[in-house]
Picture 1: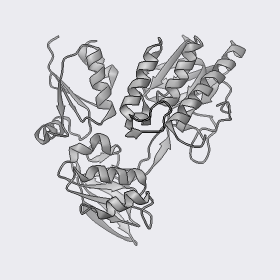
Picture 2: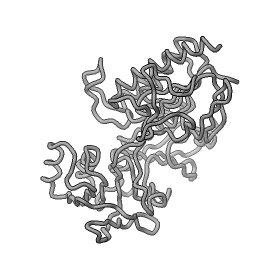
Picture 3: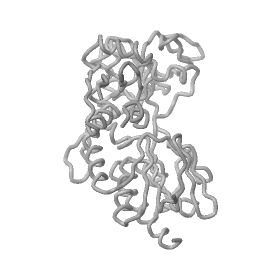
Picture 4: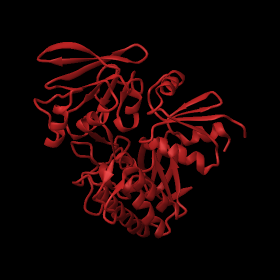
Length: 78
Length: 301
Protein backbone atom coordinates (compact mmCIF):
# COMPACT_ATOMS: atom_id res chain seq x y z
CA UNK A 1 0.00 0.00 0.00
CA UNK A 2 1.55 3.27 -1.09
CA UNK A 3 -0.95 5.76 0.21
CA UNK A 4 0.39 9.01 1.58
CA UNK A 5 -0.98 9.51 5.03
CA UNK A 6 -0.69 12.66 7.12
CA UNK A 7 -2.02 12.96 10.67
CA UNK A 8 -2.58 16.45 12.06
CA UNK A 9 -2.65 16.26 15.84
CA UNK A 10 -1.78 17.82 19.17
CA UNK A 11 0.15 15.90 21.84
CA UNK A 12 -2.60 16.34 24.43
CA UNK A 13 -5.70 15.20 22.57
CA UNK A 14 -6.82 11.66 23.46
CA UNK A 15 -8.41 10.95 20.08
CA UNK A 16 -5.11 11.90 18.43
CA UNK A 17 -3.25 9.48 20.69
CA UNK A 18 -5.73 6.68 19.89
CA UNK A 19 -5.62 7.41 16.16
CA UNK A 20 -1.82 7.18 16.06
CA UNK A 21 -1.89 4.02 18.19
CA UNK A 22 -4.46 2.50 15.85
CA UNK A 23 -2.36 3.25 12.77
CA UNK A 24 0.78 1.81 14.40
CA UNK A 25 -1.10 -1.32 15.50
CA UNK A 26 -2.08 -1.81 11.86
CA UNK A 27 1.47 -1.14 10.59
CA UNK A 28 0.40 1.95 8.68
CA UNK A 29 3.18 4.42 7.94
CA UNK A 30 2.19 8.04 8.42
CA UNK A 31 3.59 11.53 8.87
CA UNK A 32 2.56 13.15 12.11
CA UNK A 33 2.25 16.91 12.19
CA UNK A 34 2.04 18.52 15.61
CA UNK A 35 -0.15 21.53 14.92
CA UNK A 36 0.47 22.92 18.39
CA UNK A 37 4.03 23.84 17.38
CA UNK A 38 3.64 24.48 13.66
CA UNK A 39 1.34 27.41 12.94
CA UNK A 40 1.71 27.16 9.12
CA UNK A 41 0.70 23.51 9.19
CA UNK A 42 -2.15 24.31 11.57
CA UNK A 43 -3.49 26.81 9.03
CA UNK A 44 -3.01 24.23 6.28
CA UNK A 45 -5.07 21.74 8.29
CA UNK A 46 -7.84 24.29 8.91
CA UNK A 47 -7.94 25.12 5.20
CA UNK A 48 -7.97 21.45 4.14
CA UNK A 49 -10.62 20.31 6.60
CA UNK A 50 -12.71 23.47 6.90
CA UNK A 51 -12.72 23.16 10.68
CA UNK A 52 -10.49 23.62 13.73
CA UNK A 53 -10.66 20.32 15.60
CA UNK A 54 -8.02 17.60 15.83
CA UNK A 55 -7.25 14.95 14.80
CA UNK A 56 -7.47 15.27 11.04
CA UNK A 57 -6.18 12.51 8.80
CA UNK A 58 -5.30 13.08 5.17
CA UNK A 59 -5.27 9.87 3.12
CA UNK A 60 -4.05 10.68 -0.39
CA UNK A 61 -5.86 13.98 -0.25
CA UNK A 62 -9.02 12.59 1.27
CA UNK A 63 -9.78 14.34 4.56
CA UNK A 64 -11.29 12.63 7.59
CA UNK A 65 -12.00 14.65 10.72
CA UNK A 66 -11.88 12.86 14.07
CA UNK A 67 -11.04 9.26 14.94
CA UNK A 68 -13.63 7.04 13.29
CA UNK A 69 -12.17 3.53 13.05
CA UNK A 70 -14.71 2.18 10.58
CA UNK A 71 -14.27 5.02 8.08
CA UNK A 72 -10.47 4.90 8.39
CA UNK A 73 -10.44 1.10 8.02
CA UNK A 74 -12.54 1.37 4.89
CA UNK A 75 -10.36 4.08 3.31
CA UNK A 76 -7.18 2.13 4.10
CA UNK A 77 -8.63 -1.23 3.12
CA UNK A 78 -7.74 -2.90 6.44
CA UNK B 1 -26.71 -13.44 17.78
CA UNK B 2 -27.91 -12.64 21.25
CA UNK B 3 -25.09 -11.59 23.59
CA UNK B 4 -25.11 -12.51 27.26
CA UNK B 5 -24.11 -8.93 28.02
CA UNK B 6 -23.61 -5.67 26.17
CA UNK B 7 -21.65 -2.93 27.92
CA UNK B 8 -22.21 0.61 26.68
CA UNK B 9 -19.16 2.76 27.31
CA UNK B 10 -15.44 2.10 27.82
CA UNK B 11 -14.43 4.49 30.55
CA UNK B 12 -13.35 3.18 33.96
CA UNK B 13 -16.84 1.76 34.69
CA UNK B 14 -17.32 0.04 31.32
CA UNK B 15 -13.79 -1.35 31.15
CA UNK B 16 -13.86 -2.71 34.69
CA UNK B 17 -17.28 -4.25 34.04
CA UNK B 18 -15.99 -5.91 30.87
CA UNK B 19 -12.98 -7.38 32.69
CA UNK B 20 -15.21 -8.84 35.42
CA UNK B 21 -17.71 -10.18 32.85
CA UNK B 22 -14.94 -11.70 30.75
CA UNK B 23 -13.64 -13.49 33.85
CA UNK B 24 -17.14 -14.95 34.27
CA UNK B 25 -16.88 -16.17 30.66
CA UNK B 26 -19.88 -14.17 29.55
CA UNK B 27 -20.29 -13.72 25.81
CA UNK B 28 -20.01 -9.98 25.72
CA UNK B 29 -19.75 -6.97 23.46
CA UNK B 30 -18.57 -3.48 24.34
CA UNK B 31 -20.00 -0.55 22.38
CA UNK B 32 -18.33 2.79 22.89
CA UNK B 33 -17.61 6.13 21.32
CA UNK B 34 -14.10 6.08 22.70
CA UNK B 35 -11.73 4.34 25.10
CA UNK B 36 -11.16 5.91 28.50
CA UNK B 37 -14.00 8.42 28.40
CA UNK B 38 -13.39 11.40 30.64
CA UNK B 39 -10.32 9.66 32.12
CA UNK B 40 -8.54 10.13 28.80
CA UNK B 41 -9.16 13.87 29.10
CA UNK B 42 -7.86 14.10 32.66
CA UNK B 43 -4.55 15.71 33.42
CA UNK B 44 -2.67 14.48 36.46
CA UNK B 45 -4.30 11.74 38.54
CA UNK B 46 -2.98 11.30 42.07
CA UNK B 47 -5.86 9.51 43.78
CA UNK B 48 -6.23 6.23 41.89
CA UNK B 49 -5.05 3.53 44.28
CA UNK B 50 -1.82 1.87 43.25
CA UNK B 51 -0.60 4.86 41.29
CA UNK B 52 0.91 7.73 43.23
CA UNK B 53 0.88 9.64 39.98
CA UNK B 54 -0.38 8.88 36.50
CA UNK B 55 -1.76 11.02 33.68
CA UNK B 56 -5.21 10.48 32.15
CA UNK B 57 -3.89 9.28 28.78
CA UNK B 58 -1.45 6.87 30.53
CA UNK B 59 -4.16 5.40 32.76
CA UNK B 60 -6.35 5.01 29.68
CA UNK B 61 -3.52 3.09 28.01
CA UNK B 62 -3.34 0.79 31.07
CA UNK B 63 -7.10 0.26 30.88
CA UNK B 64 -6.80 -0.59 27.19
CA UNK B 65 -3.87 -2.98 27.81
CA UNK B 66 -5.87 -4.67 30.59
CA UNK B 67 -8.97 -5.19 28.47
CA UNK B 68 -6.78 -6.45 25.61
CA UNK B 69 -5.53 -9.35 27.75
CA UNK B 70 -9.02 -10.87 27.40
CA UNK B 71 -10.78 -11.70 24.17
CA UNK B 72 -13.34 -8.97 24.42
CA UNK B 73 -14.99 -7.57 21.33
CA UNK B 74 -14.88 -3.78 21.57
CA UNK B 75 -16.63 -1.72 18.90
CA UNK B 76 -14.99 1.67 19.19
CA UNK B 77 -16.54 4.73 17.56
CA UNK B 78 -20.19 3.67 17.85
CA UNK B 79 -22.77 6.16 19.01
CA UNK B 80 -25.79 4.68 20.80
CA UNK B 81 -29.19 5.72 19.47
CA UNK B 82 -31.64 3.65 21.50
CA UNK B 83 -32.03 0.87 24.06
CA UNK B 84 -35.28 -1.00 24.49
CA UNK B 85 -36.40 -4.12 26.29
CA UNK B 86 -39.06 -6.33 24.68
CA UNK B 87 -40.05 -9.33 26.80
CA UNK B 88 -36.67 -10.96 27.60
CA UNK B 89 -34.37 -9.36 25.05
CA UNK B 90 -32.78 -5.92 25.12
CA UNK B 91 -32.25 -4.30 21.73
CA UNK B 92 -29.66 -1.62 21.13
CA UNK B 93 -29.51 0.53 18.04
CA UNK B 94 -26.32 2.43 17.22
CA UNK B 95 -25.25 4.66 14.34
CA UNK B 96 -23.52 1.59 12.88
CA UNK B 97 -25.84 -1.32 13.60
CA UNK B 98 -28.28 -3.21 15.79
CA UNK B 99 -27.51 -5.61 18.63
CA UNK B 100 -29.38 -7.82 21.07
CA UNK B 101 -28.51 -9.03 24.54
CA UNK B 102 -29.94 -10.62 27.66
CA UNK B 103 -28.34 -8.07 29.96
CA UNK B 104 -26.96 -4.57 29.45
CA UNK B 105 -24.73 -2.33 31.53
CA UNK B 106 -25.04 1.37 30.73
CA UNK B 107 -21.70 3.00 31.55
CA UNK B 108 -21.82 5.80 29.03
CA UNK B 109 -20.61 8.54 31.35
CA UNK B 110 -21.05 12.21 30.90
CA UNK B 111 -20.22 14.69 28.16
CA UNK B 112 -19.72 18.45 28.10
CA UNK B 113 -22.93 20.42 28.44
CA UNK B 114 -23.77 22.58 25.44
CA UNK B 115 -24.71 26.25 25.57
CA UNK B 116 -27.93 25.80 23.65
CA UNK B 117 -27.62 29.11 21.82
CA UNK B 118 -28.00 30.20 18.23
CA UNK B 119 -24.94 29.43 16.12
CA UNK B 120 -23.63 26.68 18.41
CA UNK B 121 -24.42 23.75 16.09
CA UNK B 122 -23.25 25.65 13.04
CA UNK B 123 -19.84 26.57 14.46
CA UNK B 124 -19.07 23.38 16.37
CA UNK B 125 -15.48 22.58 15.37
CA UNK B 126 -15.33 25.87 13.51
CA UNK B 127 -14.23 27.89 16.49
CA UNK B 128 -16.42 26.33 19.18
CA UNK B 129 -14.62 23.66 21.17
CA UNK B 130 -15.47 21.58 24.23
CA UNK B 131 -11.95 20.37 25.04
CA UNK B 132 -9.41 23.11 25.64
CA UNK B 133 -6.54 20.66 26.10
CA UNK B 134 -7.31 19.03 22.73
CA UNK B 135 -8.09 21.92 20.46
CA UNK B 136 -6.53 24.84 22.37
CA UNK B 137 -3.19 24.78 20.53
CA UNK B 138 -4.95 25.63 17.26
CA UNK B 139 -5.85 29.04 18.63
CA UNK B 140 -2.29 30.31 18.94
CA UNK B 141 -2.18 34.08 18.82
CA UNK B 142 -5.97 34.41 18.58
CA UNK B 143 -8.56 36.07 20.79
CA UNK B 144 -10.77 33.51 22.51
CA UNK B 145 -13.56 33.25 25.05
CA UNK B 146 -14.01 30.63 27.75
CA UNK B 147 -17.61 30.17 28.83
CA UNK B 148 -18.12 29.29 32.50
CA UNK B 149 -16.81 30.31 35.90
CA UNK B 150 -16.04 27.04 37.65
CA UNK B 151 -12.85 25.01 37.99
CA UNK B 152 -12.92 23.54 34.50
CA UNK B 153 -13.46 26.96 32.91
CA UNK B 154 -10.60 28.54 34.82
CA UNK B 155 -8.41 25.53 34.16
CA UNK B 156 -9.09 26.00 30.44
CA UNK B 157 -8.38 29.74 30.63
CA UNK B 158 -5.09 29.19 32.45
CA UNK B 159 -4.14 26.52 29.92
CA UNK B 160 -4.91 28.88 27.06
CA UNK B 161 -2.91 31.71 28.60
CA UNK B 162 0.32 30.49 27.02
CA UNK B 163 -1.32 30.04 23.64
CA UNK B 164 -3.93 32.69 22.93
CA UNK B 165 -3.46 36.44 22.48
CA UNK B 166 -6.32 37.40 24.77
CA UNK B 167 -8.89 35.47 26.78
CA UNK B 168 -12.33 36.51 27.93
CA UNK B 169 -14.04 34.51 30.66
CA UNK B 170 -17.81 34.80 30.26
CA UNK B 171 -19.36 33.92 33.60
CA UNK B 172 -23.09 33.87 34.21
CA UNK B 173 -22.75 34.14 38.01
CA UNK B 174 -21.98 37.23 40.09
CA UNK B 175 -18.50 35.93 40.82
CA UNK B 176 -16.21 33.13 39.69
CA UNK B 177 -17.03 29.91 41.55
CA UNK B 178 -13.69 28.16 40.98
CA UNK B 179 -11.19 27.41 43.78
CA UNK B 180 -9.35 30.42 45.24
CA UNK B 181 -5.97 29.36 43.89
CA UNK B 182 -7.32 29.35 40.33
CA UNK B 183 -9.21 32.62 40.76
CA UNK B 184 -5.99 34.28 41.89
CA UNK B 185 -4.08 32.97 38.89
CA UNK B 186 -6.75 34.32 36.56
CA UNK B 187 -7.00 37.71 38.22
CA UNK B 188 -3.20 38.08 38.16
CA UNK B 189 -3.01 37.35 34.44
CA UNK B 190 -2.69 40.35 32.17
CA UNK B 191 -4.21 38.37 29.32
CA UNK B 192 -7.49 37.30 30.92
CA UNK B 193 -10.55 39.55 31.25
CA UNK B 194 -13.43 38.26 33.38
CA UNK B 195 -16.99 39.33 32.51
CA UNK B 196 -19.33 38.37 35.34
CA UNK B 197 -23.13 38.24 35.20
CA UNK B 198 -22.83 37.81 31.46
CA UNK B 199 -24.69 35.30 29.32
CA UNK B 200 -23.83 34.17 25.80
CA UNK B 201 -26.82 34.78 23.54
CA UNK B 202 -25.42 33.70 20.19
CA UNK B 203 -22.28 32.80 18.28
CA UNK B 204 -21.69 34.67 15.05
CA UNK B 205 -19.46 34.31 12.02
CA UNK B 206 -19.28 33.29 8.38
CA UNK B 207 -17.20 30.16 7.80
CA UNK B 208 -15.64 30.32 11.27
CA UNK B 209 -16.50 32.03 14.54
CA UNK B 210 -15.97 35.79 14.47
CA UNK B 211 -17.84 36.99 17.53
CA UNK B 212 -20.03 36.10 20.48
CA UNK B 213 -23.04 38.13 21.46
CA UNK B 214 -23.35 38.53 25.23
CA UNK B 215 -26.04 39.96 27.43
CA UNK B 216 -25.36 41.84 30.67
CA UNK B 217 -27.97 43.80 32.63
CA UNK B 218 -30.43 43.50 29.75
CA UNK B 219 -28.07 45.06 27.24
CA UNK B 220 -26.41 43.12 24.46
CA UNK B 221 -23.05 43.51 22.80
CA UNK B 222 -20.74 41.62 20.45
CA UNK B 223 -17.21 40.64 21.40
CA UNK B 224 -14.84 39.73 18.58
CA UNK B 225 -13.37 36.26 19.22
CA UNK B 226 -12.16 33.46 16.98
CA UNK B 227 -12.46 30.70 19.54
CA UNK B 228 -15.14 29.74 22.06
CA UNK B 229 -14.36 27.13 24.73
CA UNK B 230 -17.50 25.87 26.42
CA UNK B 231 -16.81 24.78 30.03
CA UNK B 232 -20.20 24.87 31.72
CA UNK B 233 -20.25 21.44 33.27
CA UNK B 234 -21.29 17.97 32.21
CA UNK B 235 -24.46 16.19 31.25
CA UNK B 236 -25.11 12.42 31.40
CA UNK B 237 -25.19 10.39 28.19
CA UNK B 238 -28.52 8.82 29.11
CA UNK B 239 -30.87 10.11 26.42
CA UNK B 240 -30.93 6.81 24.51
CA UNK B 241 -32.07 4.77 27.54
CA UNK B 242 -35.83 4.87 26.98
CA UNK B 243 -37.96 3.80 29.88
CA UNK B 244 -35.05 3.81 32.32
CA UNK B 245 -35.79 5.93 35.40
CA UNK B 246 -33.66 9.07 35.72
CA UNK B 247 -33.40 11.87 38.26
CA UNK B 248 -33.81 15.58 37.55
CA UNK B 249 -30.19 15.76 36.34
CA UNK B 250 -30.95 12.98 33.80
CA UNK B 251 -28.71 10.59 35.72
CA UNK B 252 -29.86 6.96 35.61
CA UNK B 253 -31.25 5.89 38.98
CA UNK B 254 -29.65 2.74 40.38
CA UNK B 255 -29.84 0.90 43.68
CA UNK B 256 -26.76 -0.29 45.55
CA UNK B 257 -26.54 -3.33 43.26
CA UNK B 258 -26.42 -1.11 40.16
CA UNK B 259 -29.90 -2.27 39.12
CA UNK B 260 -32.16 0.12 37.21
CA UNK B 261 -35.97 -0.08 37.18
CA UNK B 262 -35.74 -2.42 34.17
CA UNK B 263 -34.73 -6.01 35.06
CA UNK B 264 -31.58 -6.93 33.12
CA UNK B 265 -30.54 -3.32 32.58
CA UNK B 266 -27.77 -2.18 34.92
CA UNK B 267 -25.87 1.08 35.09
CA UNK B 268 -22.54 2.22 36.52
CA UNK B 269 -20.28 5.23 36.79
CA UNK B 270 -20.85 8.89 36.04
CA UNK B 271 -24.05 8.27 34.07
CA UNK B 272 -25.77 7.19 37.31
CA UNK B 273 -27.06 9.02 40.37
CA UNK B 274 -24.31 7.47 42.53
CA UNK B 275 -22.57 10.33 44.39
CA UNK B 276 -18.91 11.23 43.83
CA UNK B 277 -17.89 11.25 40.20
CA UNK B 278 -14.41 9.77 40.57
CA UNK B 279 -12.41 7.36 38.42
CA UNK B 280 -12.03 4.89 41.24
CA UNK B 281 -15.72 5.08 42.16
CA UNK B 282 -16.72 4.49 38.53
CA UNK B 283 -14.36 1.51 38.30
CA UNK B 284 -15.78 0.02 41.50
CA UNK B 285 -19.36 0.53 40.32
CA UNK B 286 -18.43 -1.17 37.04
CA UNK B 287 -17.27 -4.24 38.95
CA UNK B 288 -20.50 -4.31 40.96
CA UNK B 289 -22.64 -3.91 37.86
CA UNK B 290 -20.88 -6.82 36.12
CA UNK B 291 -21.34 -9.13 39.10
CA UNK B 292 -25.00 -8.11 39.42
CA UNK B 293 -25.54 -8.66 35.70
CA UNK B 294 -23.89 -12.08 35.93
CA UNK B 295 -26.09 -13.09 38.86
CA UNK B 296 -29.19 -12.00 36.96
CA UNK B 297 -28.02 -13.77 33.80
CA UNK B 298 -27.54 -17.10 35.64
CA UNK B 299 -31.09 -16.80 36.97
CA UNK B 300 -32.80 -16.12 33.61
CA UNK B 301 -30.55 -18.28 31.40
